[in-house]
Image (cartoon, rainbow, N blue to C red; front, side, top):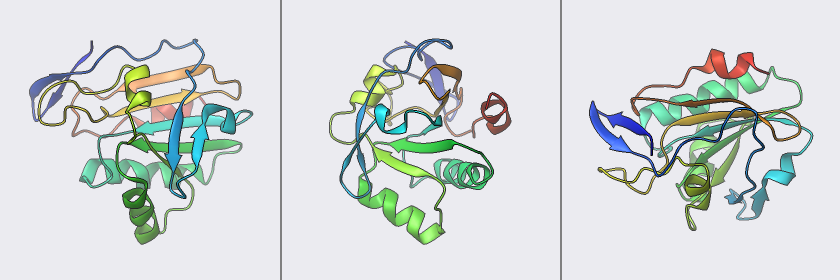
Length: 165
């Protein structure tokens, strides 16, 4: 169990992030067209998993905008923005913002992604949502970088995540 903070107050996750050098665990999440996406769908591409509690908060929205901006310059790289928001909310946000370089995936059905990756918040007002995490994978699904942001209201370290690509 990892300890993070929300407004300086301790909250916890259900586990620890997967180790750098390990293989990423497969997932089933919902795309904005309501189809299903799995990790295998992105095989052969470098992948940035931008994970956050909700698209409807300022910091989460900022991370989606920033990764959208950075993704346009990255060769063979997909940025997956993952939350428990409904796919409709994710699609609405990116459409209103004109964001086309990220792929939104929703873990709303059962939270399996958050549970399997050890980043589901287990207590406090955001219990059941995902903590703010960035995980970077190579083309073979090997984890190159992880960051669990200590204060959930803070943005991730974009430069550190993108440096491993």
